Amino acid sequence: MPSIALKAESAAPVAGANTMASKPKPCCVCKEEKAQRDDCMLFSKSNDPTSDCKPIIDQYKTCMAGFGFQI
Image (cartoon, rainbow, N blue to C red; front, top):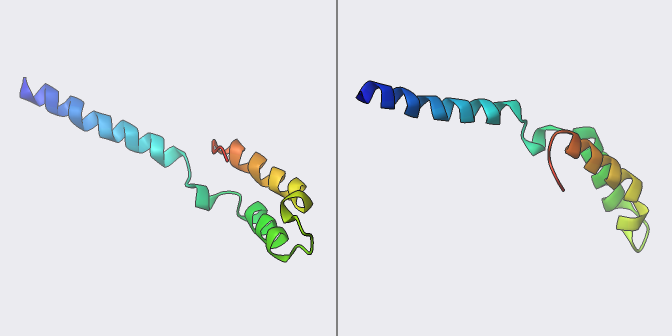
């Protein structure tokens, strides 16, 4: 009987690892959109860079949502 419990315990982390491996890390996706967003926010001459860069920010959010990340 202990060997059955051992198999069940060892199967659970493997399934969790597969789930984590299938979803990329947030830092590894949408790099181009993130760079454009950062450049716009940092170098905007506007008093309100958030409103000035809204289309680029929305593009980045859409890209991240495509990978399952909510911002």
